[in-house]
Amino acid sequence: MSESAHETAAHLALFDEVDHAADAIVRLREIGIYERDLEVISGLPFSHKILGRPEKRTYVPLVGVFGALVGFATGAAFNFGTPLLYPMRVGGQALLPIPPGLLIMFEATMLGLLVFSFVGVLIENGFPFFRRKEYHPDIANGKIAIVFHCLPHQESLAYAAMRQLGAEKVSRAETIVL
Image: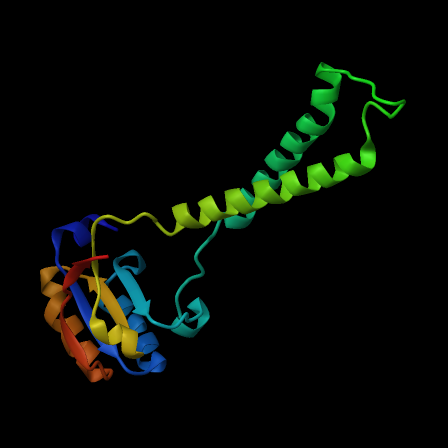
């Protein structure tokens, strides 16, 4: 959040329809409220395109690929490193059996992919979250909330614009500990 977001209180506008919420986001930008000072809270996942917001860049696929590579390297080290460090020939079998080794490497690759992707999602979404967060109980009943931070001179203009665009409620946002 910007410096202005930390100096001002959060404001919340509740909408029944996604079209009105999208129009409200455009209007808030016109007033001079930056994208980084806007947050949309909804019980349903809406695409950034529907709301007219820029696409958030995600690094989870890249983190997942890195995890798969780490898992593959770990599986290869276990599969080929252990027999080379501690050679033990049993019954004329190969020292480095490839078919069972492929299974180990596959499982280690998938484990690395899953663990790194899971941790990447947690970090990207800011979990665990210990500070107070803006929320309104009607969001669970299908309402769409726009939480915005604005300077004091923008407040009355933003409130009037939200009401004009069909906001059911516009007020300072209440915070709860989630």
